[in-house]
Length: 196
Image 1 (cartoon, rainbow, N blue to C red):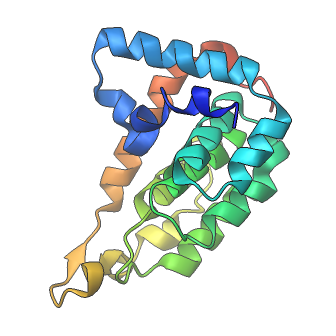
Image 2 (image 1 turned 90 degrees about the vertical axis):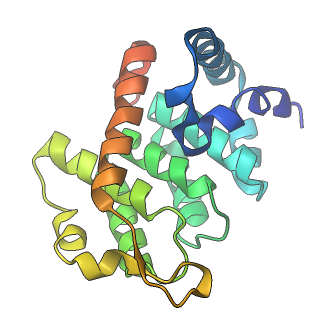
């Protein structure tokens, strides 16, 4: 796993968008590590990372695909996101889909939300999916997320089988996702629209 040396300095900062809260010096290191990985990792590395089943590798490869807006891996992203087998990795599958920014991205995000709402007892990546879909709606003047936002009952669930009903707030997911995109637009302007 030669590519693992590129994953190690990135995955903890990628997780949940932790890079939004790191100090200035660490942001520079994170950005440079991301750029190095984007430049050095090959298509073969990306395929291996998606096939690994390891959430660290999957969030990292989707982060990198999202930075570049690479549509080539959309089928692997879909196969990784829709089963929702591992927590964390879906966050950046949603990010990559938003940055790929095509009709398949919208279809996959809607399919994910159709399948996993109402929330139930698995809270994994719903907020990231609605954030990505709403970001695409805002950018393109569409309303694909509307059906998932109109009914607040869709966002209620029993976390880990608890009898207490809790709710996810989709607005928080939308706000957080927008901050992630603003970070990327600011620190990675050379990659904006490079593969779309």
